[in-house]
Image (cartoon, rainbow, N blue to C red; front, top):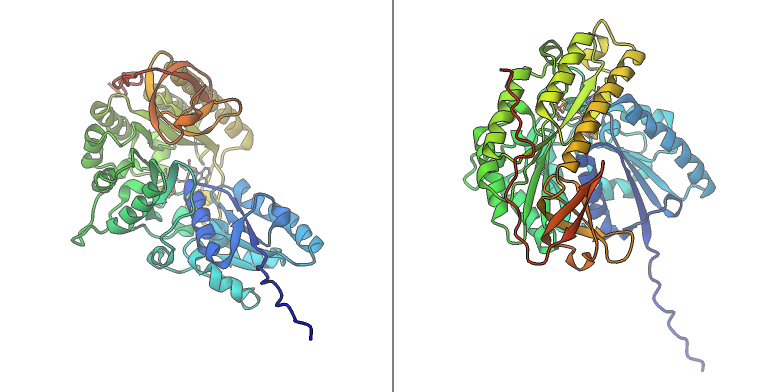
Length: 471
Ligand code: SAH
Ligand code: SF4
Ligand code: F3S
């Protein structure tokens, strides 16, 4: 009698997940969380889309170009899916999914499911019923608390820095912006949930968290006693977590900048002296048309107060040129504001009319040629400021959080308090640590530094302490 051997157990083939992320840091966070949700189903990330069993495009609707990219990417994916005889599931997530879910389904039949930003915790369930899900627009109308409650506690992040979403949505309704429509009303996660996630991150070796929200300083999550907590109070709680050396937050709105947050910049060493504080325009007339609900003087005054509390604070911002009705004079006001404030870094965009927003139908749309010329002029000014800011770090000693190996030898790359990349030789053994570095020189996009034997980190210099008032 021949003995039949039991066949060796067959390992289920690992399923490969490819996520392409567009847009802001909140989408980066969401993409990481989608991977976390799918990990228990056996999905492991792949870097090559051709290998993927499941492709997610996590999309952005903020400007026309961003949204259009999705359709061209989907065109390429359709061909790939055909080559693989259909053995690939395609999902569209994020803000385009939310804004144009039905249109996506109509325009691109290769798409299997569309999932809005508040529903990605349902991906496992959606995947098991893709056939049925097709044609439905999933998850447009869920409250964010469902999402966050359903997410796994464990995060798969690797590395020493991490994003942590604490606030979602926007109630501001700037007349150019789609975010209030794609992300819904302002909502904050409870303090305990944020603290638990930050602890988990710190336990995994994360040394720096960036708290995220479309209006992060409008944060008002419930504290232990149920009453709303401010972002400053949250930052103080997070600063108690062992191992968490650095706290950042983005994006702030000037109107939500409270006194306790300013004080936190003075009193909380973990809070990095670098602030993204978009103003969009330097013209009071345009700010009014944009519905920003503050003028240029208020922005100057606010910056003066923050710099008084933290003299070495550096700023970054967002600007839009060519908003409907913007004249040369209005644009000059923006240039003037930039000269007065002095930015360490900034993003600037040509106005892009977005369907459904009030500005899209305003009279006096500015021509592309004029907008482009203004953008070039503004970017030249901002780049000059960035180069000068980086160059001004030469000779300073800055605390650098080393994040990863450099391209050659034992070089390592870290971040200064101002988010500049700092390249340092013979520092590969310091990854994960904050170490004083003497800055040798500053280039446009990075700094070069060297380790000092026993270091004293220089106290905050006054590199950016320029007066900003209109006086
Ligand atoms: N909540 C943040 C911004 C989120 S959107 C804030 O209020 O500052 C990120 C940036 O995209 C904005 O700051 C703005 O500069 C730009 N942006 C938004 N809508 C735009 C549009 N329709 N055209 C061009 N740029 C736009
Ligand atoms: Fe958009 Fe204005 Fe809200 Fe920022 S504050 S997300 S620009 S509506
Ligand atoms: Fe884009 Fe949505 Fe972020 S529109 S900028 S991905 S909130």
